[in-house]
Length: 283
Image (cartoon, rainbow, N blue to C red):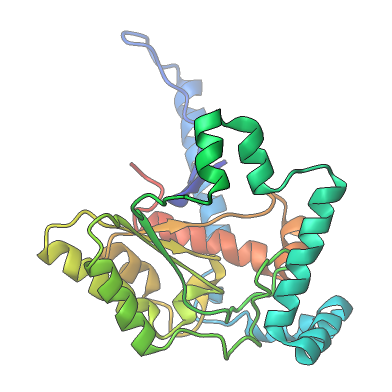
C-alpha cells in the first residue's frame, strides 16, 4: 500500500485497469480479488481496536526517566528558566549560522534588493502585509516526547497552557480581523488542551453564521486520537470541518519509535486508518 500524507492520510491498494472492450480473464479477476482481500487483511491488522481508549502516557513517562539528555535539559531549565534557555538557543543558532557564512537578515536584503528598496530598509521602514493566518500554540502538554521537538513538549509540560480568558481574546482577534482566513492550532498536542474544542467550535460556528470562509487546521501527532476520552475526537474534527495536518518522520517502525517513542508507529497507523474511515484522505 502507499501512504498519502497531508489532510489525514490514506492507504490504497493498486487495482489493475482493463481497457474499454477488453475481456477480463479469470486470472485477472482472481488477482483483483486476492489483492483486495490482502489489503482488507492488512487494514484489519493495523487498525488495532485494542489501542483505542488506551494511553501512551505511561510509556512516554517511563522513557523520559531513563533519557539522560532529557534529564540534563530539565535540570538546565530549572536553573535558568525557559526564557534563559530560549536566549541561549538563539545565540547558539546565530553563531552556527555565522560559522556557515550565512549573513544576517539585513545584510541579505541589502545584497539582494535594488537601491530604492535598500534605502527604505536601512531606515527600518518595513511594513507588514495583512495577516492571513492566526496560528495559536495553545499548550506544550503532549502525550509524546519526541527527540526532535523544538518546543520540548512532553507530559511534564503542564503549566504552559492557554487559559479560557486568552482563548476568548484570540477568538475576538479572529472575529475583528477580516483578512484572517486560517486558524492554525498547534502545541504540544493541542487536542489535550481544554480550550481546543472551545476554539474550534466557536470559530466554526462564527464563520458559518457570518458567511466567512475559514480553514481550521489541527496539527496532530496522530496518537492523541487513541487517548482515553478522545474516542469521539475524529468525529468532532470531521463535524467541524477541521483539516488534519500530520506526518511521520519515517516510513519504518524502528526509526519512528526511536524518534517519537516506543509504540508510536503502530498507534499512528491505527489513527490514520481511523481518519480514513471518517473520510479523511479521500477526495
